[in-house]
Length: 222
Image (tube, rainbow, N blue to C red; front, side, top):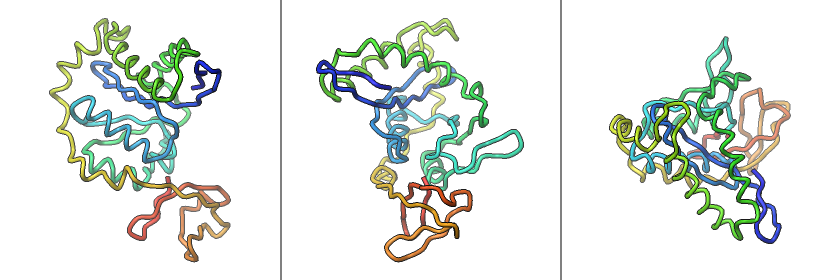
């Protein structure tokens, strides 16, 4: 999403979006990158916003979540670091079918909401102003009648909230939020070299540039 501030400076930002299935209650967050730590932070903030954790979450096939997309003939292969996060958080990940946008369901249908933000062109000065606009926008859409249910998300959420799982202990997630991604090109031998040491990575990354993190001498492809 590209928006101009009052001085004509273009801000290129992303919108992180989580939608609860029953109520259509939404959490929106403005981000400036799509790193794995940003995804983790967005999910944790959504849990705090909802006051609990959904039992299952459906994801798009973004590289911070899956190493190999789900197809009609095979299951997804989740990124190892992401899968650890799901276990610590207490939810089950589900993956959309590759090249099947209709399986994204409610999130995909809400893409038109992003167009509504274009009215804020030339209406803000700083990134902080834009963050505040997104927060207010989040509250507004949760107070609107949903075409899918005929009710306001905030009203249906009152019934849905009690089915959410308890919030996880936030201390567990410090490492997830402080990860700094590195970048290397994978050799023909399916290796990357870091500080004189070589690490093996899955062969599908040969000749590709990958983002990764190292923790406890284990490499995690993002």
